[in-house]
Image (cartoon, rainbow, N blue to C red; front, side):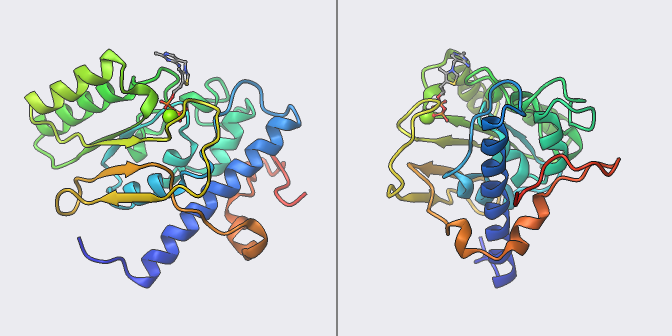
Length: 239
Ligand SMILES: Cc1ncc(C[n+]2csc(CCOP(=O)(O)OP(=O)(O)O)c2C)c(N)n1
Ligand SMILES: [Mg+2]
């Protein structure tokens, strides 16, 4: 795969910054009790979603996890509709009825965050199988954490993908932790390109660190100031 150009690198960085700022804002809103339900943050893992989704086309499919905001943003999800969903508003992806763990956008190939550990893997198998039967070269990527690796459904999906030769690469994110523990930030991120172009796997212990917000231009944050179509602000990012 060709080295990314300077513009592409800037684009990748902006995507990572968008994810980071989105998650910071979500944490603020959760702490203010403005978001009902549970949110799992993607902070520190921005490079995983960004790198993988950069290699995907719009019609490629991803399935996500309970920690899905970063995957959805990296695949082109609209941060305003995401925040609206988290806040239970009608402008949200699921009209405010799904929340953090059920955001989906089929038009972008986002086949859903998922509150059930490991459950995205068989969905990706189905999407990969459909793409194959339709004669496309679409791939379906499923993200999962290390906590999913002893889930039967994940192992069945891996077996199925191999047996049926499905275009369904898996992205394992090895945090060494489950759910809400915070790994040490100095752990290094590493990925391998296993096959040319679009079949990647990620060996991730902990993604690379990115600059603190104070070192960034505010312009980078402006993309995620959600303004719903009715003009009423959903939040004030720099408040
Ligand atoms: C089938 C199933 N079992 C248990 C849970 C409860 N649960 C939610 S997140 C989680 C840990 C998942 O760990 P991992 O996949 O490594 O993701 P991480 O939180 O580390 O990002 C568990 C056990 C669940 N949601 N689904
Ligand atoms: Mg984990």
